Structure formats: C-alpha cells, structure tokens
Length: 115
Length: 111
Image (tube, rainbow over all chains, first blue to last red; front, side, top):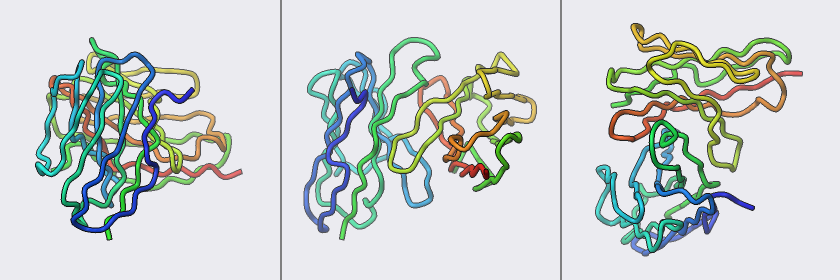
C-alpha cells in the first residue's frame, strides 16, 4: 500500500492552462504539505494543512490554491500556468504533536513541465 | 536566502568505508534537525533526526552529530553500502513547524 500517493506523476501542459495535482495519504496523519523542488534542487514549503485548516502559507503566487476536502487529501490547483512553474511538486504528510511533526512522509512527486 | 546549506553537492566513497555528509545552518531558532534520503523518481524518506538538546543520535549504521555552537551537523554512514547511493537532504525545523531543506548531497558508493 502506498502511504502518500500523487497523481499524475508527470504533467506536461502549455502556458496559460489550469491544472490540478491530487494527493492522498492513508497513514491517518493530521497534517499535509505541498513542496516545490526547483531547478536548483531546493525543496521549499508552499502550504500546510492541519485537519483541513491552512496553517502554513508561504509566499506563493495566488495562482496556486490548495484544497483539502478531508484530512486524507490535499490537492493543488494552479491557474494560468507560467514557464517558471515547471518543477517537481511533492506532497507530504506527518502526524501532529511534538518532534514527530517534522518526520514527514513524502509522495513520489509530480514533474510539471510548462511549455 | 538559504538557511540550510550543504556545500558538497556530491560524495564518492568505497563500499565498506565511512561516508560523512556535512550541513551548516544559519538560523539559531532551529530546534530539530533531520536527514532525508532520496532515490531517483521517488520522494524523500526520513532517515534520522536529532533534537537541539542532544549532540549525537545513532541508528544502526547512521549517526548524526550536532554542534550547536558551530551551527553544524553531520551524518556518518558506517559501513557504506551500495544501497546507500542516493541524494541526502539535510533539513531543520523551527518553532513554526516548517522544515527548511538544503540542496542535497549525492552519494555514490563504489563497489
């Protein structure tokens, strides 16, 4: 059983389009995240939800909007895609409470290419 | 402004020898440090962690050392095995529960 899954794994689209990436975790965790890994390979936090409530919202263009229908799912919608949005996007989850909050479980990533 | 830095992008080591990966940080508010391992086309997986109140944590072949005064931590892998070939990310957490990651070090274990 895959603990954190993302769909699709690859996404190629044109500038200006709107796309979504889905994430699901079956670990029973309360907290989920979206990270972006850019061309320099840095993993940067974008958003975090705890029990469907937004708790971290980094400086991200408002074209990016996370949606959490329940605590097992965190989807990422991107409007008006730009070339600079090309990256690998990782979803992650973690339990709440104490230091284990930091021990996050990552999905396999979605490679987004905007042409 | 990167608060976590891994200055060695790559490391090559012979099987059976020790691998030492280094990480420096700038934010004195970090209170928890972790190492993640990543294989190609997979997400990072948690490897080992250390709290800021400790200076060493060991788990099997993996040991993490923390030097708070120098704002430096290291990961030792002994002995190195071919399956250890991967990208290793150093990460640090602050009281806001956000993780800051380094750029990673690619480890290649030679047979």
